Length: 248
Image 1 (cartoon, rainbow, N blue to C red):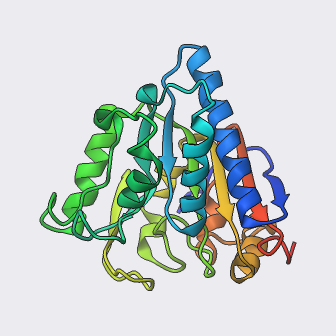
Image 2 (cartoon, helix red, strand yellow):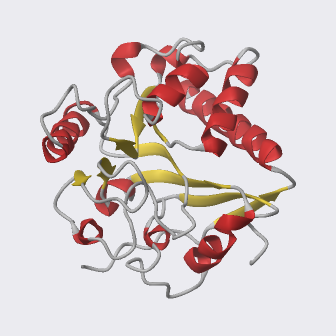
Image 3 (cartoon, rainbow, N blue to C red):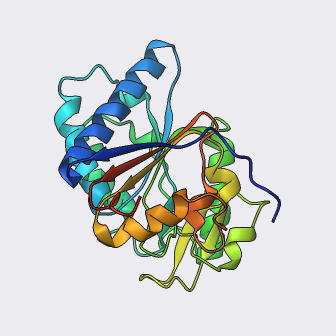
């Protein structure tokens, strides 16, 4: 694999609790969206899934009531998704729809979900379809890319030691043997994830602390800890609670 571009040094924010982390992330995102829209730009953001993302979504709903963000002028993507039926509770998109997209006024035409089993015959076809969607409706880069990190250091659905880590010529790839269920997933590649102005890692819990420390250590091989391989062109921020930051 060719050497990845290295952006500015990451910024680390440590919050007292997962709830405080979620409030901070939601507030920061709304501020960024207002700034972008005030400058005449239609921001493109990529969402993640998981428990902390769900908390962020709730805070976005709460804080949007007093925010100047025009959610109808925000384009929404995902960094990865589970290749399951569209109504499966395991879908990151379903979590986001229920959490805030259905209530804050997002234009459904600007919400670009990754394909489900109802949209594509197999996971590889789904990855190709999403790559085409990004090429057609993307702006060339994401304004904010939000990502979680697994205890094994995986990011999006790029897992340690997997061949998808070395794919450079595609926007999205299929994963058919994920060590974390469900086994079939679609993920953006490193080359796509790194086409982001701002990369935000949202990590809570002491079970993630070792992975956070590995990802932030100098010289970590992304094949061992994929989270080490994603950086924003303008900034990379690690939003952590005390537990997740306990090994730094």
